[in-house]
Length: 356
Ligand SMILES: Cc1cc2nc3c(=O)[nH]c(=O)nc-3n(C[C@H](O)[C@H](O)[C@H](O)COP(=O)(O)OP(=O)(O)OC[C@H]3O[C@@H](n4cnc5c(N)ncnc54)[C@H](O)[C@@H]3O)c2cc1C
Image (cartoon, rainbow, N blue to C red; front, side, top):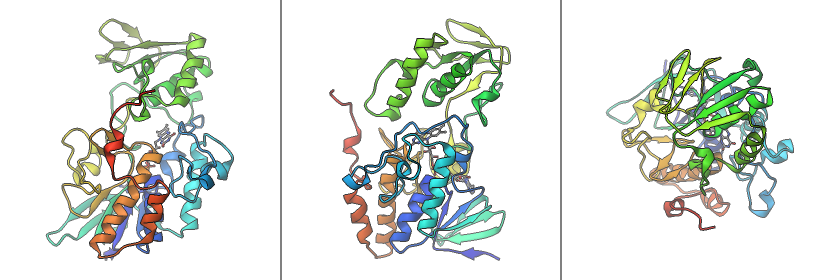
């Protein structure tokens, strides 16, 4: 037997929980389907990993905690820390879900999505079929790491890696984090990335490294334990990694820190990917299917990349406003979100570099 719900959100990470909290305040409650736990991606973080974007209790002065998914909450206040761990953040998401009494079905794996000629969206799940009028995809990217043969990913802890020399493919946030933690544990490392993010500054951390990571980089360089190669890894084998100018013999399998590709998952069916990222309308609706929206770190409009929580949370109200308007409704909560800096629809601000 199939179940029906007007609005379904897939994924109970920060995007799904934040979006559902807003919809619930707009009197449009959604059903969240989550295959594992609330905040599953954060439960999977290595134990050493901390938020790079700082949390701070600035809400009462209009500077809302950068890692909050609602304007009223603050992980900094909840845990009295500036850089929460994955477990702390998963707990924060559970608390937000409890506070708004969100309707979440855990253990439901969405395996396929189809849209019929009448625009009814049906989800095939391990618990049977679920139909909806609006689907909000908040499935995240963590399950879709780029695959490179002969490489390994980081698991529960950096302590699981044997001491020695490690080669890390990718020099963005994850690559530098790996190098930093391996050095802390007595290893040395070579980081390879043709874009050399460690070598330049940008005013939008989506295009480079965050200040937190630059702090670590300075400490790391002081140890002399890490080398950087600003070249493409042309060949990655079991025993060697080759770049244009170097051949590195591997003591241990190379570590893959090259990011994610959601096109390999169900999102690849729901959205067009003309330039490697999902093509979206102005209100983050799929250009392939009507009434299917994307929320989360893969929202991108030209140069505006919404990959951090403090960025993509500003698109929840854009999606909610569009759903409300199609149903002939309005909500003062959207204005409240706008007043609190939780609504960004003019993207002209997101292009260009700071002058100082
Ligand atoms: C090491 C690391 C450090 C980071 N640090 C920061 C930081 O400091 N600041 C910041 O803003 N961001 C940070 N990020 C990025 C942040 O983790 C992501 O932006 C965030 O997890 C994305 O949220 P999401 O809700 O879109 O996806 P997720 O958190 O991945 O949640 C998606 C959920 O959907 C579920 N799901 C997926 N597919 C299905 C399906 N088919 N059926 C049912 N359920 C499904 C998953 O189980 C998961 O729980 C970091 C990421 C990593 C990996």
